[in-house]
Length: 262
DNA sequence: AACCGTTCCAACCGCATGTGG
DNA sequence: GCCACATGCGGTTGGAACGGT
Image (cartoon, rainbow, N blue to C red; front, side, top):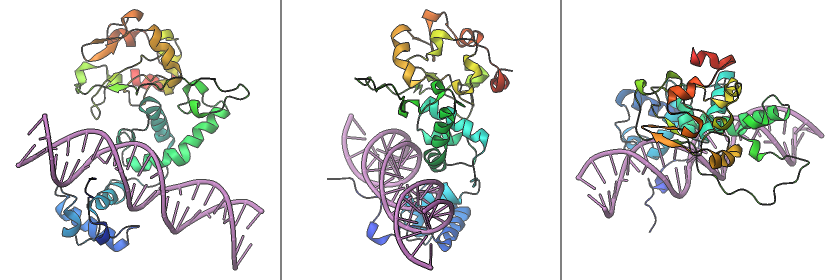
């Protein structure tokens, strides 16, 4: 037996919302709030819609703080950096873009930003090594590898215990998202950490959540660097890092990253 | 003007997760 | 711990708008 549907599809309207429906939903929510119960809301608001549909319409379109219109260069950078670091976790990415929804960000990425990044890579505006899409690109004229590498585990893993501001250096802490990443496998820059590594904005999540590994580099890094948990965060004793202070003390930032460290 | 292919985004779907009894 | 239900989330789709021929 399958899961019961969230509503009776025969008796609910589907498809695009009319201005009248929008007005009814907006009026109801502004007067009464959601009441924490979207399932009951459409009936109370006089709408022949599924509660799920109402929720989506409110969150993605009707909310007063929604920002409509094109994405800025800064938003592009944030999406790019976060996608590279955490993948398609659109709700997390959207939470860092005031007024944007996960649906917005997802659509924007799929229809525009992905192509923009691919184009930038092809014109060398973005180094291939920094491109989260590099693995999808052809590397002509060399033929594809005969055996594809095994799938990588998801990364980074996010600790479930929240941090407080004092636990981490400011560059790695944001009160809106008080979690640290436990890198698994370890970020490849910890193998080499050239002085310029952090000058590349793409290597650091814009809001300072963590240092990002590259999928393409991960398997090599994981085989040669060991990692251990030191309290709440992951460090790399083989490389001489035993704390965040050690780790950050060995790194320098230039360009757009200077503001994060100053 | 008509047709066709592409782009874009709102909306849907189903699974995952959270929560209360 | 189990179950039922509500909500959250990411992937996918449908169709309107747009541009080219």
